[in-house]
Amino acid sequence: MEQAVLKVDGMSCNHCVNAVTKAVNALGGIEDVSVDLGGKTVAVKFDPSKSSLEAIKSAIDGQGFEVIG
Image (cartoon, rainbow, N blue to C red; front, side):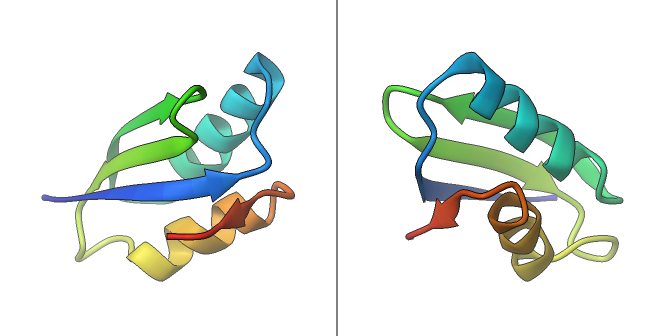
């Protein structure tokens, strides 16, 4: 398993948290997703043989948020 912590711009409410969590969990190989609304971060634990960091970033971007780091 790998873990990544991504800085995400545009999250402001629980709806945002739910949208990001649902989008990332829909990918294969995701073990855990933790969104810190105050810190504007998304921590993801994933199996790199089933998912990629780029796919995770794309899923977040697809919900209308910008991964900035």
